[in-house]
Amino acid sequence: MDNPDKASVNFHTDHSRGSLAKVLTKVAEGGINLSKLQSSPIPGSEWEYSFHADMEFDNLEQFEAVIESIRPITAELKVYGIYKKGRTV
Image 1 (cartoon, rainbow, N blue to C red):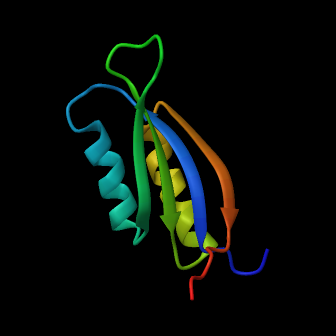
Image 2: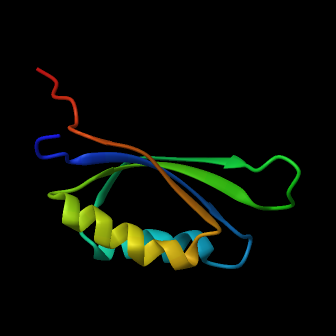
């Protein structure tokens, strides 16, 4: 794909204080913009949440660096897709 600049990601955090803030701080420090962040409780768990995020970035290396920085502080991390963001007229 030519110059992807957006990705859809899902990650889980535990219920510890500041767990989501730690992830979001790493994303911001990496220069990535979140165009969407949606939370859902994980069925069968107590106070654990799944987060869907659409991330916009300048280049693939920037995105990959941020993913590697948040991997250790998330319970589960999946990249659903990397693509070129749509343009509106």
